[in-house]
Image (spheres, rainbow, N blue to C red):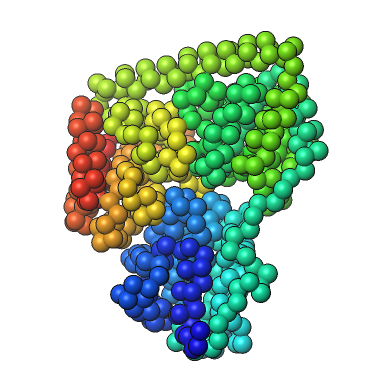
Length: 558
């Protein structure tokens, strides 16, 4: 191959791993790489497309969304310690979202171990608790080998970010000779491991004897084929499925989908407390999980590629049985075992259970529908009416990118999602994800409508000027819908008393004109305050994005 530069080597590895986009915020040190990408693309040579993000957090959130859409590992490039710190909460979200992202920065000054003030500094220490691996490229190391190892670690289950600190001159540094990847221990992507069939058979024995089983899942839908397999498993077992909304794991119009009673007091779903066997598949205990816990006598079975959960057992209990397995492979095998073990004696019992669950599902769905319709004539607009209207204008192929907080139950129960990769949410706790993620999802799904849902606080946190600029420039139009309650509502709900003061610290009084913010970025923007205007505004905004223009609807809620 002859002599190549470090920039050539970087592109060589990204091409090998199928990286489509390089999300970056520029620094003086990465200019040679950006120039080389431009040179490759101008000459028709394969290269990722560089996506300039005007804020580093947007770059990481866009990479996060692009991974969820494409399933491919991502690369994010920022400048030195300052760009690294600016990533902040976006890296937290990538960690909890199990995003395989190679996050690169250059140390600020020579010899590569000093900070802005030229003091000794361990740059990797800033992110060490949020990545699977951090590494500073040492003198004599081959950049290609280190990058290949980084991809290997990031894309090995459980997926997660890695952080590389690269020398300032690495992209101009000459490298000689070809690089034989086949001689290295790191393949492109690892095949999922097999699983213990004896454990799976024990699992089937426990489940088939249960009277009220519950399947609960968080991220099985990251493998699209697992969605239909989970449906078949639930139908074979006649069990409710309680799913997080981080991925579209299970169709929410299916009779076995566990619907939450809108009139129940907050505290979590009752089906979790009444189940005698819980099959937890690809499930993390959420950082803000409700206080509801399973019955102390319920058996817990755990199927996951990550059984350790950072040393924190689910519901602070060790499972009765756990199996390390790729759910997309293990679910159909478990279903077949259950089918074989089901006798003629079991069938009437399973049929009765299915009918009981279906009746409950239909009754609760009707409750949610009535709540939405009641809001048709109420001003300010209710979240249920807004979500009901969204459901009227979208298709099965529309992708919902959701980071609502207090209205999240309305999103889940009013907007029907039945297809894999049609709903994405944020597993982490850093607000502002939905804007950048919407950009990344649209880049991954250029032919599908993408609608990003968020509160007004999240819109501000999401760096709207930076995100909308990228969406316009790179022709990645998506629709942003702001659930504008003019408050940090999750905090406001915690206040025990109301006092006659101007602002207790949770209200966003006299809010900015978010529609005008959108228009200033060459996007479509419209404020909506009348419930009768919701559907016309949605149709207008969808027409705008289909014609190539990003859109923002600022919907004033109750």
